[in-house]
Image 1 (cartoon, rainbow, N blue to C red):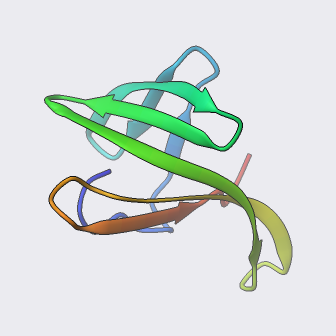
Image 2: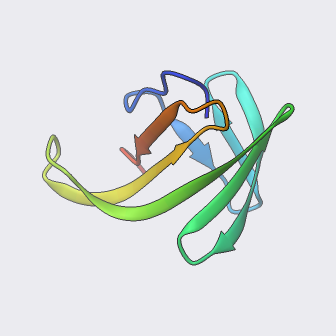
Length: 81
């Protein structure tokens, strides 16, 4: 995911393997029960998926996190349907 991903910026993860975040478009595929691989442009990243608690909205939601190959960590949370 791009450096500086914002939890307030929507990320669309389609069931067909397509994802979109801001102006970035790419593909994703399931690696195992808790890991996705996303690809965009020349980049390929592993993303770990888990249930997290959103304290701002006081609900459980889906969380994504990982470390890019250049060492930058990222995280995101699902904020809407």
